[in-house]
Each structure stands twice: as structure tokens, then as C-alpha cells.
Length: 109
Length: 150
Image (cartoon, rainbow over all chains, first blue to last red; front, side, top):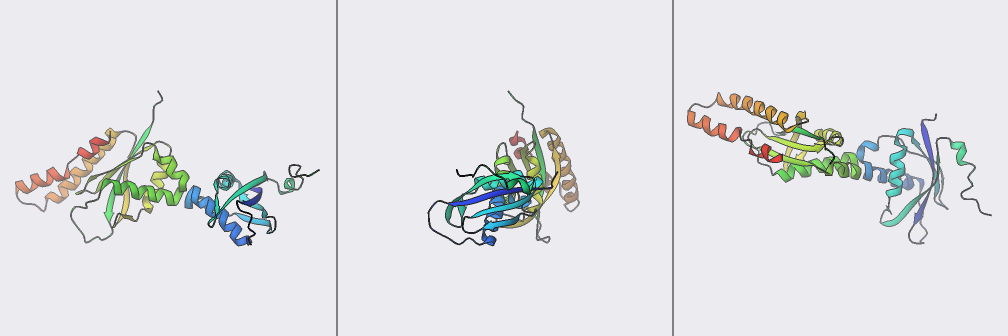
């Protein structure tokens, strides 16, 4: 099986203000969330931002298999981006990148 | 009722300044705080929440600089891994040496007793009168704090 897990996530803000979230800041916020919940020990592994859409704040990240549960938990508990309230929505996760392609959950009729 | 396993860790606080001799007076709450801070840094909120239940840290003897920590079995690994990263307790620069980890208070008690006896013997060589020795013995072999952990 794959050594990585892929997560399709969306960043949602509490207020409707439009902000530019660069890929670097997006990743930084994820790493910060992991560090705050699981400390320095969990931060040693690589979290990669594979695809990022700054307009919809949708991203696909890749994490090592053994860190997947911790990252998923941290994203759920993450509540702020800088000084703004935010939330992460995990749309789909999979150990295979290809299976993120066909997703009926976000399908609009 | 479910039995809780505990782990007791005996640590020694060594002062950063090696030339400094004599007793090191630290408040027990400061040792507790320093360990929590270290766990917070290394294991985050999760680590602190895991060790909180049943966590006790007591500074036992300013002469021998020994402290005893009680932690639940399981999260005690988080405590043990965070101990070497403690740099200061309150305003004192110290480093922590883990001397012993035991499953019962009794074993820890025996270890501390032997350890303190050994230290006492070392110090005794320098003293001449019996009165001084008696005084030092009273200060160094004081086990009241260890017994109060329970």
C-alpha cells in the first residue's frame, strides 16, 4: 500500500472578506495546527501541498501514512488563520491520489 | 473499580553553573510547571492533556536536588521523553537527569534512600565534628516529601 495519504481539503473563513492566501501561508497554517496539537515531535514529517486553488481555497495535501491521523485531527481542531476564525473541511481522503478524482460528494445536479 | 498503573520517575536537577555548590531551593510547583511546559512544546496540547491526569511532581530535597514525578502508565513515556529538554526551572538554569523509573513508590523510596546515603557519605569526608555530621544527615536524608506523594 502507499506510504502516503492524500487529503482534499477546503479552508473556510467565518467572515466573507476576500483574502489572498498564498500557498506558503496555507501550508504554514496546517503545520502550525499540527504543532499546536501534537507539538514539535509530530512536525518532523513532510506535509506537501500538491495542488492549490487560491480562489476556492481548495487544496490537495500529501502526508506520510503514519502522520495521517494526527494531521486529520489537527485540521479538525484548527480554528484560526492568523487572527481570523476559520475551519478546514476535509472533502475526501485516500491513500491513492487517483481516487480523489472521481468524487460524487461535491457533485451538483 | 479499575486499577490505575502509575510510573514514578526520580530525577536529579543539576545546575548549569557547575561551580555553584550547596542546596538548590526550588518550589515544587516550579518543577511541575517546567515539565508541563516542556511536554507542551514537544507533544503539544495532546501531550499535556494526556499527562494531566494523575500527574504529580514534587521537589524532595534541596541538598541532593532530587525530585519525584508520578505519571500514569502510558503517558509516562511522553513525560520521560520531555525531561531532557528542560532548560530552566523558574529562573534557575538546570538540566534534568533521569535517575530511576519505577512502578511502585516502594522501589523509588529504596532507590532514593540508597542514593542519598551515598551522597551523604561523600559529603561526610569533608566534615570533622559529629554535630555537623548529624546536622547534614538530618538535612540530606529527609524523606518527608517522598512519603507524602503516596
